[in-house]
Length: 403
Image 1 (cartoon, one colour):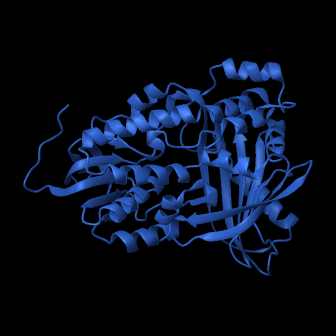
Image 2: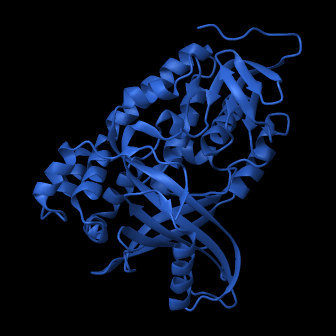
Image 3: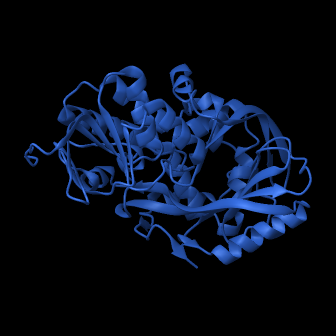
């Protein structure tokens, strides 16, 4: 398939990255570190990079090269975290980190320089030879990488992770010393619900209300009220500084080849969620975004078409590698009653902490998988079998539906 030709007015670069979220920003950074003289353009439709997000991860999610890639970013860090369930609470020793989109944007602007970053630029089309902006300007490139999020897909099945987060500056020290990764001791409200708490400072808290639910409905009034009550229950009062909401797919199955075809543009590499590089059950993206960025930097001198083919192969391997997590997700949504889904995680968090870390990193060993599955199952066996053999619900809802 031929791309459009060049004109004398084209802007030219070696690599054009479309989408300045986590995946695109990390690719640009990895390229700058590995190939400091390579011309790279990072193109983002919004005025800031990274949107309005927070990304968190365990130290063990990344190897030494991944940790080095993230070194320029200002991060919150803690040694250890807590989980709470109706039957028990537990303290775990893992080192945990968190990065905000504001710090992501600031570090990338410092590391890449303004010549490489082009925010507020909406892309109308892209192809193997470059990118066309909404204002008609053309950016010609040897390699084009599409890091924009995918649209709803009838080729994937699953459920939804719906959340609302809030940052509060309390009027007195809140007393929370370590993150609470899951507080599932709360009312479930017809889904697997847990509250996530990060102490960002002596008086600053990030609190997020999260639901694994069958539909993508985000009821802002209901979630805001529940956050209010959670703060009151813990005697946290103060000024709300900001917040975020989101609806993420929890992938339980589907036809990945058809998904790739749906998102394919000839000769254009796909990365991030558009390429399928996510944890299908937790919706984590950071460890996979880091791995992908380093892999692209390693092969950045390949022609664009060859890099695109390499990335598709890499994505298919990732899909095969994460099948175990999709099967667990299928059982979570298909076999457990919505209000009792917490029992699956309640049982999981009794296991060895290194197994838990490998699970979140998408690096579960065969022995880990066996350990997760053996013993008394938290869901009925007959329903689990039915969930694994069923087709599941297509992930075709709009990005956000307000209830």
